[in-house]
Amino acid sequence: MLLLVVEGNKKETWQEREEYGGVPYHKRFMEMLELLRPEAKVEVAFPADSDTSLPSIDKLKAFDGVLWTGSSLYVNDPTQAVQRQLTFAEDIFKSGVPFYGSCWGLQIAAVVAGGKVDACKKGRELGIADPIELTGEGIRYPCFKGRKDKFNALCIHLDEVVRLPVNSRILARNEHSEIQAMAIQYRNSEFFGVQYHPEFLISDIVFIIRYMSETLIDEGLFKSEKEIEDFIAKLEKQSDLPESVIDYTAHTQEIKYWLEHVLKT
Image 1: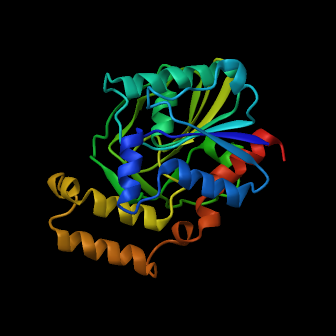
Image 2: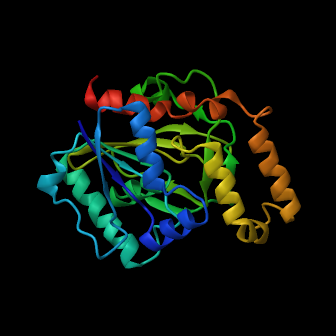
């Protein structure tokens, strides 16, 4: 079994965060896959960096699945780091390999397939997402077979999908964003992705909040550093958090079932 993880951040970004104690997104995915599929061989691609080579369409066909991480970039920015990722996503769709994305990965896939992404009308969603509810399509979708009622998930996003691509389905929504999960049929591949971060640990959100504290205060999500530390203390205490966030097996289940779905095992 061969899987490809695609890092959505530029090298300078994920390395800087790692120096401050954060876990780079591709490494978090690799740790998660070691838990979910210990037998799998995992490779990593870095399309945001122009000095790295990427698998060709023919080489992509050797993979059993591609998983795309989050990112601090914005898909509508006309930068090389973004354009190179859009081009690589197009190649993945052409290759026919099954395709999954968290947050940024969802936005990249949606734009490539003809959809539109824009800033969230309600601002940034951060920490624990508002309760997420499956649509009728989502209830029937194999990657959500473990979800019965509304559930919570760890999240951070400032943008969201605002126009669906052709041949796509909304699978989940919440009060903050109309599209919290979707499936897309495009070119030769089926894509499944979510706007939240099933792969995250609570410690990932704690790091991000501390790392972005000035920005979050400027945006009005928090009034002060003390309010941030109080919120972090609540996250770290965990006693008042929903089970769907505390239990990592439950939190990652969409990816677990996606792997089962695409690998047929």
